[in-house]
Image (cartoon, rainbow, N blue to C red; front, top):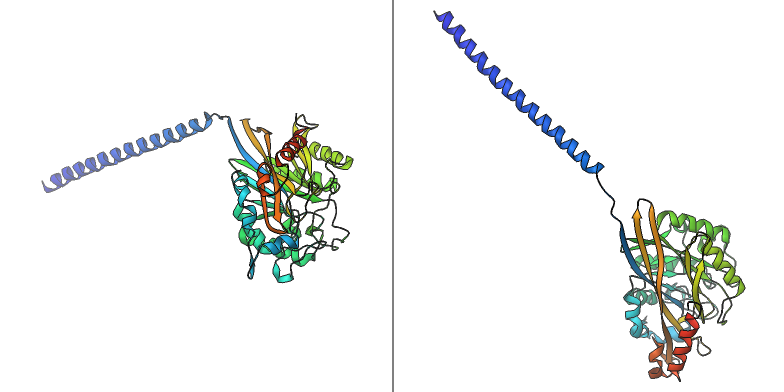
Length: 383
């Protein structure tokens, strides 16, 4: 009897265990099925993804030569330091409002520790860099005929200080490794690469084995850099230190180089060195696109006066990026504007950069007439 009861209980327990095992198995199967469904559904979403075209733009501004003569840095001296900010007060908004602004730093900023100096061998104080950053300059070009004025030490000082304050620089470098880093800056979903080259260094030889200290104009080098820059950026802007001093129109050499650079793929060419303004225009490229060029931006701040050497300006362009499909991106440079500027001073003191249209209040005779003349001069090849 006991055996029969034991057998019956055993059967009941086995049946219960089997029921729970079966229920658990069924639940596992439902989880697996749901998981499979979820994975399949997720995969379907990826497969059905559709590309959406988009369009974005940014504004880029550029200014000309910052040629800091002793008259300028002595005017900025305040006790044991220097303050250049009052010189930029009247044009600060024009420099800060664009998405990105580049300047040509003609004189190396090697700092007071190695001794400041003026023409013909320049060296400027660190405080100038502080002011540039404060007024909206994002990157400086330092490839010019004065890059080697105070030797390697000044270049190392300048580049180190730019790093310290978060200012980008291009055209002169501390090492070969530094030179190989393409300068790319991003604004509004647009990546823009900057390159910079100079015709020479006033006869000062580049130290052998240290060619990275300054970029010299060499078309093979330029074309190679443009090719590499286009691999990592949407837009390529190139600063060229070229031309003949005090000539208000580009030389045949400038025109030739500009076309070669355009055909190599540059989108924007920014010219420096003549110390006076030269016109801007469009170049038709071999690939069917267009390159914008301004042959010289003149002096933005310097101790030079008269004969157009105290007139510069702020170039501004709109860069438009339109993506219509995978690997289908169109870049255009549009809507160039130019704010003419004038460097005023009173007996070599109180240097100020002011809008040219307001220069009558700062001592320029016939300011309205000069402003109209400069506007016609700069836009004559755009009409």
